[in-house]
Image 1: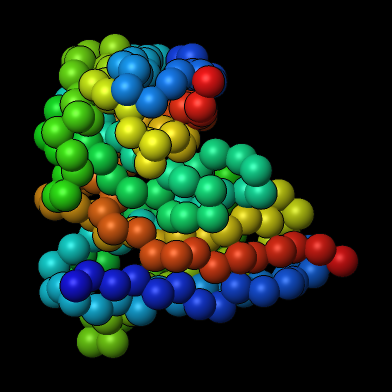
Image 2: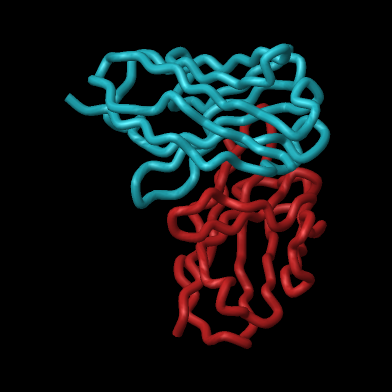
Length: 120
Length: 108
């Protein structure tokens, strides 16, 4: 079955950096676009970034543009999110999710999430 | 950026009742790119509906989606105890994906 497992979360000081990983299994990773979505404590869902199946297109939310970088290694079936210049408002559970089909249709399934806390 | 508004914010209903959730977009959305998700406390979201009206794999037929343009609806025909959760709509357009703020369906 399709499985997505995030890792790399933790506590980081404001201005610091962190890299999240999402290990994928159970499907042909290199054939699907992937997303990062976050959820601040007690809040709703916020889309963060998207990368096309081959890495040719990357889109970002305005709130993270210039600070976060999405990437993938199709040989390792792994998705990444490099987060720099972190702010308190970046504190959230970060989920990776697979595109259901095509380039932009649906987020399915989702990983279990990894918590990032930005605090001094 | 297309902004999604969901109403009501909270819907208090009893098991067996019908739930109607609304999602309104600030500008027209392609139906192909409108989806609905369910999230229970402490869990990741789950895709319910994609393409505005297609049920995802394993989703019971009591869940249905409809709408076009700027107005979309998620209907749960008869609420089961496991349906009490938060529901989000989501769209794609112009290289941006956005989620609505969510509707909480709780037990009356």
